[in-house]
Length: 384
Image (cartoon, rainbow, N blue to C red; front, side):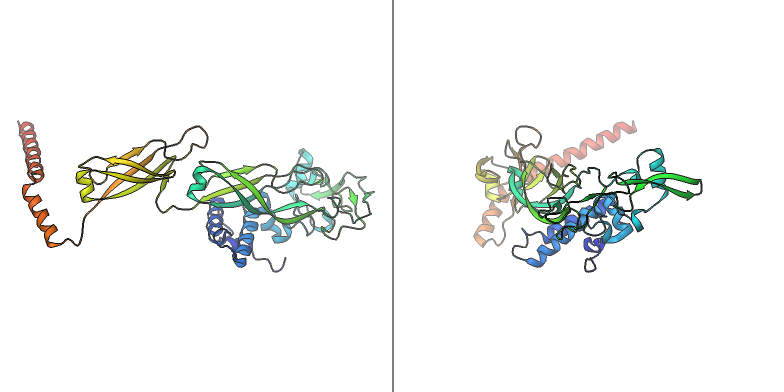
């Protein structure tokens, strides 16, 4: 654990960072070092695993509290048993007022036995997909770091051919009654058994692979089905793909946050797709049959003559699949008229001739004068 980097340093945030700041830093780092973006880059892959591990701890309030208090030891399953539902202090009895009051009034960490079934912790991961993959859905493999049952001892914590002994101090309960002098007097509470560290059993020959914990940390690639219509920043919940539970407890869940890469042509707004369509001055003036790019390929659209720049037309059903319903959104195409440059002398002369016969300027001047007359008339009425 000595060579491990500080989790806050790994994500590039201060220890006082908020939950949103931690999430934002993780997403930025994950996009930068994701294996899909850095194929074959072992350094980037190692960095990606490091930030995933850091986010797994700092995004969970309970794990973060243990890490802030004990460092890596507080969340490492192979050190003192602290990584699986609590860290024990000297002799397995780490007291505070919360523990004392919890045992008196029911609940609290001191009143919980480590040999009771505990659900596995949730695991967080980041998945980068393309614009099209988000629109139509896909199946991807997500690299995650999670806690699993030890293969060698099948979770018993005992070396092969050996069994654990029931603790004689607590008779297998994992807890004992203890007294402590406090500001309120001598108080009796239920605490973790110091002899078996709350396990209810004593392992004389622990498994060498998991050091008697029955659980190990392992990297896995988990197949995830990304639904059509998923958007950037949304999170998928994959049941039963988190960390293994302890003492027969339920397996935790995997939470996958989606990051959608920017597209060179399309933009998304809700379930709509936005596209800018450049056309020439001649096409806009005379009308043209355009080939418009869509997620389904190019489609033909008859643009009427006299189309102005900024005009928006709609292609129904060419948008994004609705994530929670049927049907797709629409595609909105904004026309941008390109002004010609580098004209030849002949082309310029043609435009001058056109300008000389164009009455649109006169129409605009007439409309402007009419507006001014109307405003002056209103002012006269007001003065009256």
